[in-house]
Length: 232
Ligand code: NAD
Image 1: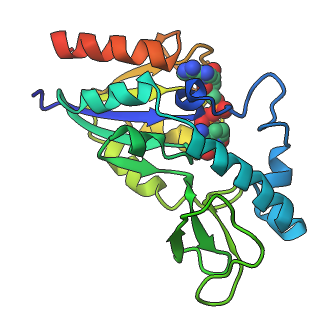
Image 2: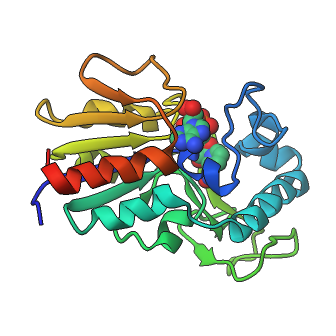
């Protein structure tokens, strides 16, 4: 096995071919909703029932979705390199594919957290969180996701993981959500950076980034096959 450290930074695009919509489509909405209405602390204060309903539907869709060839190829990559996955996704498709080292930057939809104390996190064995569900402190449960405007506690760990990467493989992200998008800046000068995306966003890219224009489920298996052969 190569001793190369490969950090894979994934976004909603890797799960698109599993049937989970990305949120920056042509309309800039997430499943027809404005982000401010469903994915901010203000939305939770204004209309918690609406927020819960939104994530309950997303959770059910996640449970029904299956990992695709892109997720599965990343499991295969572990045979050839030291692989660390850092994902912006809240779905659990990397876990269900079988990847080992996974860090979620924006939380996990299959878990709930206390609305009073964010450190209190609970696995969910049902699709729905309702307003009657409370944490051990008696406060309502909310989805364990990092909303826009909230602190992303795993960002510091992610920066450290990238800081000594040999290869940074960026897959299916618009690189428009911050601070996550700054992760590319943490890669050392020696690190090779590759972006796989059918519609790459040029904003955070420079000549150092090799772009593979295409979909994750077809391009990732090809890239990994080549890596296994040539160990570039
Ligand atoms: P984004 O929606 O802003 O961008 C998606 C990117 O994926 C785009 O660049 C698009 O061109 C690309 N893409 C589309 N289809 C693809 C495919 N088949 N293969 C590869 N790439 C493809 O997504 P983001 O940058 O991850 O930011 C969205 C935020 O919303 C994330 O922080 C995440 O928490 C949340 N979100 C999560 C999910 C999920 O968990 N599956 C889904 C939607 C949104």
